[in-house]
Length: 196
Image 1 (cartoon, rainbow, N blue to C red):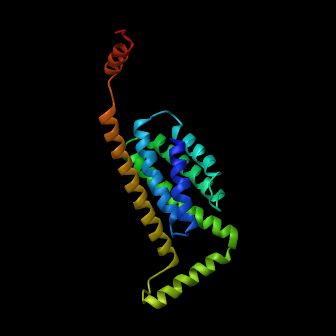
Image 2 (cartoon, rainbow, N blue to C red):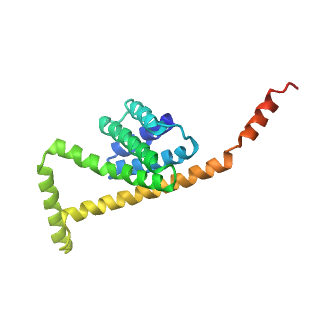
Image 3 (cartoon, rainbow, N blue to C red):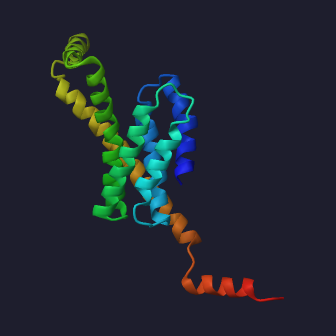
């Protein structure tokens, strides 16, 4: 599972990040939430999600992308968030939706922290000035920096909820389609081990 997630992150993630596509991290996190919540319905081993995230993050280190550390941290933290959410709320639709919302919304927090580390607290003044400039140009007088951040978090949370619910649904369908009862497994093993 970790290698599948890593292959997706290395190929698609590196492509999007190197092209400087806006909100590439959000797109990658949304797809990852879908993949992991679907897998969590089929494989129920304890700690599987955070271990999968760790494998994916370590494999991301061989990515041809110029940016490695931030995505590696993001991948691992997303996996831990999903693991904790599914552990506390269960692997049902509620746990998948909450975990998806938190994991995808984390990308905005990670971006804000990394930009603040790079540019310092002046970043907040630039952001506030940018929002005020946009407010004057568009005529939206009620536009406030907090409102913009709340809108971004709401959009990302909605994407995460959608991805989590879609992953839950697909994972359940796969489990229902391919799951076998213990009796079917025993019959299959007996049939295959019987000499002809």
